[in-house]
Image 1 (cartoon, one colour):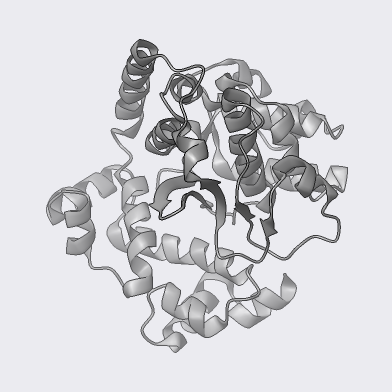
Image 2 (cartoon, rainbow, N blue to C red):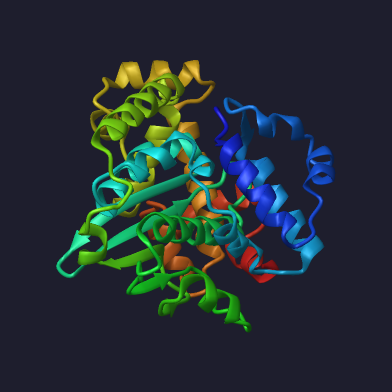
Length: 333
């Protein structure tokens, strides 16, 4: 299966953020088998599991569970690759964040963004998916902190969320979270999200430039088309994540969602070294780890969220994947 990757521009931002806590990333890159010099190559990409291990080691070295929030201190458009400049030249923050959603995979394939309009607000939702390793909490917090800091950098410090939603329990020390987000915090949430007042996202941006926006759209679109050409597995995985809570998805339903025939879907997956059944299994496995890390979810609920009609099938599958029961795995966490 094609492994998810992270752009060198986002990886460099992470390295700069970790350095603020004294973490020597050059040494860690060697330790993790990643090429530190590739950070200077705008076309380079790093395996997501490698970046997850980087966050894990940085947490061990620094002892700072809020180290991801350092990303708010290294804001610059280039960390978002061409997407950052596209966002800056948009007419409004709403339009810019819509571009960020559209081109997110250029920055990092492991993150899925959505922007939804509600009666009195906009909700920018973030989902982080791992490859073989469950994603690091610090990675998700870094993404939210950076997105909000970037919005303030572009539109001014008056950008004030109505709420910041974070998965996982509230930490004992909240000072850094309050400093970075400056908004009401909701921990143990079912999602990572920034909730914005409608008027904040709809006011004109001082950096708006329609001609530049179209130019950056062209660059981003060309990059994404080139990059996405053989990534059907990633798009199919997104569809699976959306459909699983409704029951085990059928191949024909996923193919229809991707505007492909079943035969074409299977062929494209085979070309990427995968299969529909293998992708379904891998998606369930990685989601299981994410859900088990959320203590408010019961094992029964997790079984249904993974599309298992019979919870006993979930228990059998989990034992096959990890050689332990879901309850035993959660106890280790």
